[in-house]
Image (tube, rainbow, N blue to C red; front, top):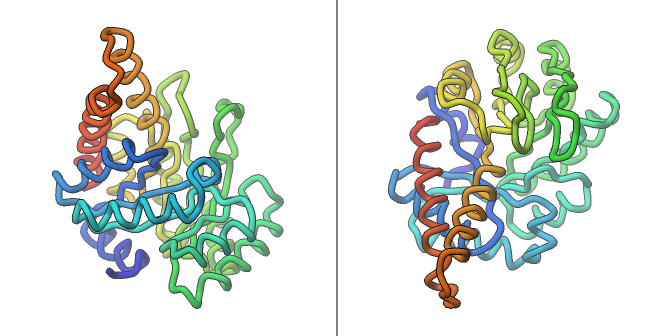
Length: 272
């Protein structure tokens, strides 16, 4: 398996991006991997601290790695929104191909200092390191607040840290949108010219199809999808449970798996 950094380079040269999907249990893992297999597309599997706490670090990692092998999908396992050096180190030791240190809410210099430590930590593993710069509202935070990534800040940040990938704030947010997001493509283009880091779009759930296509065309190498996976799975499952008396989980889960699979197949068509 090639390193994620090399794959990002290949995808960027082809005008494509990697889809990064979070998974929360076996069913959502199966759904995204079936979608990738059906599209013969590479995929990044993401785990947040919440998912790691829920499933257990070694167990969650083993599920992802064995799933990639079982379904025959070219893929990588990534720590999404890691908030501490300790968690990044644990994930690297467990075998993760990529880790994110999210210091976006810290002062600029502190974000640089801590991200640089993660970059140094990841070198012996050859692992990809992602950071975030600017304000991309998380679940429960103010989505009206805007603190977009400055191209000059991005240039300095990447130069000082040596980070491989950078999540940029260009108008997206995590979770559900109250109104259609408007991405600042001019800013994205300027950031792309300011740095050679692989650019990441967080908050991809709910972004219009054409906006995702354009973002990839302008240099986004990784598009994150999480909220839509949870929403699609849970709503479909609720519908199934309300409308029948079936208690066999092996019969109630498949429609929800199928719905997520179709969602991810569509998302893969946008980035590829």
